[in-house]
Length: 116
Image (cartoon, rainbow, N blue to C red; front, top):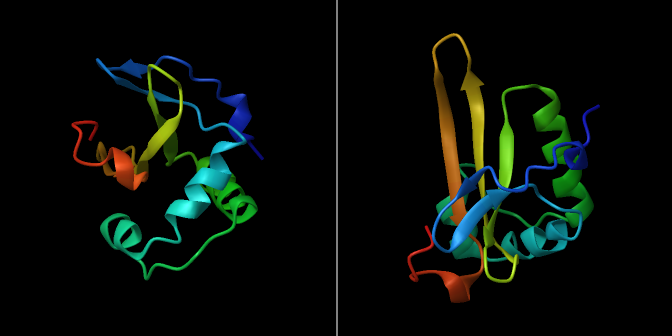
């Protein structure tokens, strides 16, 4: 099984105020809190939303990344490195060159400020 922390992406994609980076161990607690907000999940998930634990999210993401058709990134503010959101490419069809892109700004206070 691939481990998430074996992908130490630190500066793959960078904008003026945010960058895409690896998901760190302490990010799973933050991400699990986003799953407790109904509006956030209705905008992000195509499945019915329900709360997820931090260990459950970590396990799910590791399993998805093991398949080789799912890549996940933390959306981080450059200034203080805090996680603002999550972006992933999933359901990648390598033969057809297509994938599903999911992006969420999970922290309600940072929405509407031009990060997404």
